[in-house]
Length: 567
View 1 (cartoon, rainbow, N blue to C red):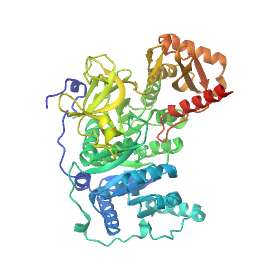
View 2 (spheres, one colour; view 1 turned 180 degrees about the horizontal axis):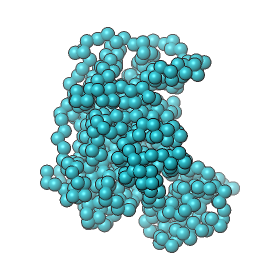
View 3 (cartoon, rainbow, N blue to C red; view 1 turned 60 degrees about the vertical axis):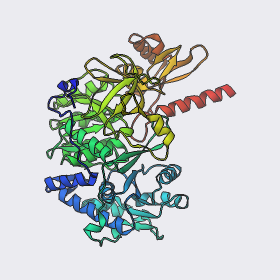
View 4 (cartoon, one colour; view 1 turned 30 degrees about the vertical axis):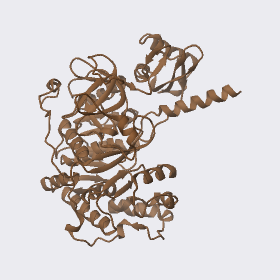
């Protein structure tokens, strides 16, 4: 492969990698072999070395095998970020199975959909979620449910304290299909619990709205997961000396692949965070001194709102990375300044990714900030901007659809050939390109810029309006904490721009403040992109991973307008 021109900005990051054949488990064994005494994970101060992690994976594989789990079966992992969830992930892979990740706070209806779609005969969950799954048992293919307690891998003192606190909430398992993981059969031979898998074999199912907003199962192969993990590790230059704070959950591609898999493939340590509170994360940062801090924009803003964080030593930070949502420049600058004042040199970098390509597949180089840019592709990922209808590649500066080719691109959507065909398309070059449904452009140096989801773009008086661009401008106002922009029906413009704004000080919300912010935007954007109306809210709604949930605001506005029409 010829060296990509833009790799001059990456320094010594390799522009191509050699990916081993075989399974994810096979590659993890190399980490166990090369870093036996290094700490693999830290869970509430209880640690496990790579050697111990290897033994735990073998033990879980033995348990699952004895329960009837075989190559090709799917195990739904309905867990928060925890040792059991991670160990089960690699154990399932060792057996040649498929790990399907489900948010444990999903509704019964959502769980029923996911378990049925994946045809999961096996699942793993916590005791506190058992009854929710039991309620849908007769409606899904589930045959065996492994149940565990979050306290099992806690240090002794914390385990005892947790047992006392939850003694009245313990769930008795009185059915044959539910098995306490801690009491399951562990007696089997090593040879009977290993299956040699190929890189092309299905390994993981993650659930995503894809390009249409309807939940789908994203099928990821061993090579998808391995290549993305190796690319992240190479870009971040991760090694045994690094510590990653795993704030993002394992049921999301970002958390699973970057905070867990990339770290473990590189021999680094991952600090597991089972439940997010900003106070706990600040304590962990001060205590564990992670070299890598990875999250979504709302996380970094929440940290800046905590005085203890703003006054903490941050000299240990080597990499800070924001993804999954647009990073406002004002937030980046405030975070970078806080790090600098507290002894650090790391800068907050923005990247881009999607579940259909495992997760992050490009990012800004550490020393080449360009406002609004989502960066340069990782090794072996090719990205171009095309006309969404003709697939013709567009010149630098022209806005079109972002399409992706490379080893991290998914196998397809589970049991959904129509959507797979609509998303994975063969171009004239003979390659399969993932059509992201995202609009963006590329500059002359090869840096990419995200503009908007194709379906979220607003047409106002015939002009394309990109909500993320408007939101970034609004957030530059000193009183604004977060903003979300949507289009609402208008008799004259067909669609007008409305902004929902969360202020640092909610007592400042007033008609005068609304006019002030609108005028602030008008000085910086053409009039078609400026909000005609601002609604102040105490808290913007967030998705389960902390992104601003614009769909909820759209639904709220639609319901309000529908009611008004009827009146």
